[in-house]
Length: 235
Length: 229
Image: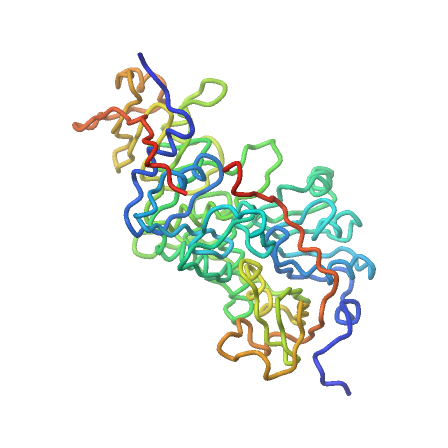
């Protein structure tokens, strides 16, 4: 039996992804998204997926690719602008969406990975987000009960990783990836550089390898920029 | 002659609220412009909720890095002293009251300090992003907006009729016509745009305004030296 966590590519690492599963996907906009995994899912064809991810990509990149192929049935996100395919499918009733405040989404994933089934947060108290949820006062202020999120698979993009699954992220490409990594039954990490154990400084590891079940070295990263904004010409 | 404020003048006025050493989160639109008017010597740290504390200016072409963006998904740089962190840590900062000030836009604000800025029923809803967490958690919430909407309706109301972003959370509203504070009894008019009387501001406001004993005229002169990076 192969005990190694290392897989040759995305398709091999995603073996077992089936219709109707819940996938947790790291990234913020197009920054720090698991590009190789998304591309492989398009080829593999699993349908009726629920995707938990802060955003839904753009029409022709990121999770937008899985929307184009109609593989996603439901998105759980904080912001889904910048995507016309999403808008059309949502208005046609083909796609469900659960909008979650960004900090609540991050905490629900963190809780899911940390064995906390639910937590109280002030975010959204007194708004539509609170509907159907328990509200409780602490020190005179209302808080709402939010449930943890876990997934069948978690798809993570890191800068470097080792063969045990230890991960190092780079700059703001970290975003949701560390929480997503903890909350998947099977967490698949794709990295720009895969190294042997011992090569990463233990003091600099952001996600300990215990949270990662499968890892592979990604290739052909596009790292698309959504809004190139330069200093010349001001804002 | 009366004069309403431009977007830059609103941003400049809000920049005067930023104190030395503050950690500040700026929303999209007029709030983003506030950064231009915060003097460098105030050593302010800008927080971007996607995981950056210490946001610098936009990059030169040779500094562009796809792994370094702000919450509006624009390419940015990191300032000296910056740190990167996860979204969970970012919102621990925000929800936990470690951010001194957030400035954001709004469609409506009411006299109970509630605001609405994320959803118009019947229109495509794009999501609240981090706005609900920011208004629930930042120590001080300032709204930057026009006083009246495109159809001439007051955006300051007794009670918001659009879906709320947060309740009892707004401290001050800076508009193109006035600076209005919100206390437990409602709106207090603190400043008026040049040439306007409190009565004229009341006329375009759909809720009673109490007039501050220290009523002032808003400053609209942006000093050239006040322009930061």
